[in-house]
Image 1 (cartoon, rainbow, N blue to C red):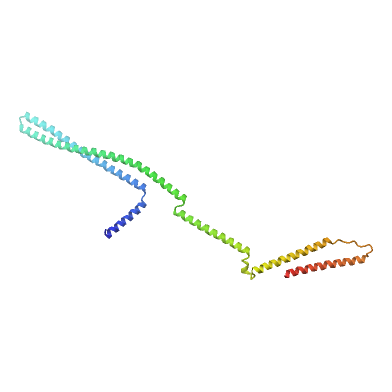
Image 2: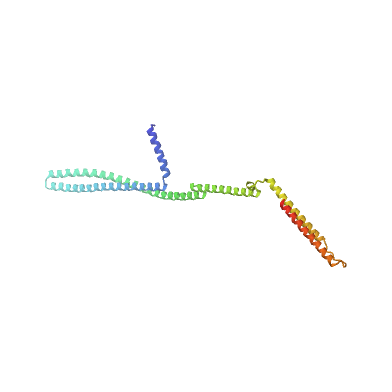
Length: 278
């Protein structure tokens, strides 16, 4: 196979492949049906033309038959008038016409046989066309149903290109959403652990823990002080002044108690200030 032949073969193969993909079976069936109908019309026209030729031959035969009768009368009249020569000429013409009639009868018979064959073929072709029409409509209905089912199946199973793109878009959206959720959770965890404080502070984890212990110890010391004060106030009981104590002595005792309370308040304030300084 030469280069040109191989190239032509490849081109035809490509064209056939493209045509097969673009072919619509329903359109092909309709086209075939129309072709068969055209063939049927051609057969009918052929039958009509053949019948016309046969009718012409039959008309010619009838004219010859009329001439035969005419020549018979001529020959009879010539014999009655003792004109044998005219009678002989009339009979010769009659014989010629009879020979022509025989030829026409053979031709008419042949045309009749052809007409019968064409009519039989026409009937057979017409029956085939009707059968093909029924099959064509059935195949078209099946193809359209299959096409609709395939379309629905593609939509339901998301096998089409558009649905595949949508599926990939959803997957990408889910991945991004999961990444954002993981990042937000990580930031919350870092914030709770105090990792972000390291960025804006020069204190390390040990410094923060020591400060927390110092704060806790200050609170505990203050709590113990308050508990001891409350316990002392509950244990002290007021004493009634003696009958022999003078009014001036009672005033001195009251002043002493006030001094004691002031000294306790001052001590508590000093202790609170020391805790705050620490």
